[in-house]
Image 1 (cartoon, rainbow, N blue to C red):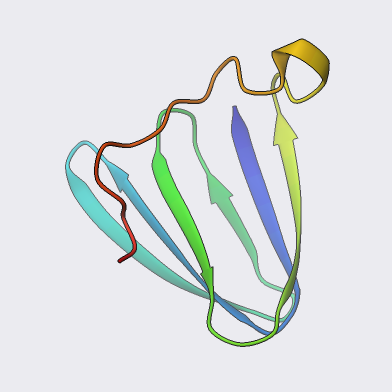
Image 2: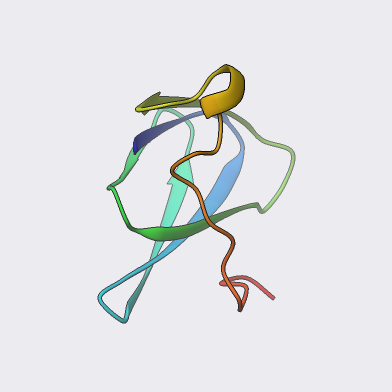
Length: 77
């Protein structure tokens, strides 16, 4: 699944890991942050925040998490 995150309000940190490299992006109002397929990721609000998440891939019914797996170690402590 490809995921686009639109920050409506607040500040949010997006942390991702792909091919062993850690990437941190600070998202603020009106920012759009893309997460690619197979990119491990986590999101943490730094204050009260609202985000809209748009995805391309299975995200409904029985298929809701068919392309998702849980990480053994959290990206955010």
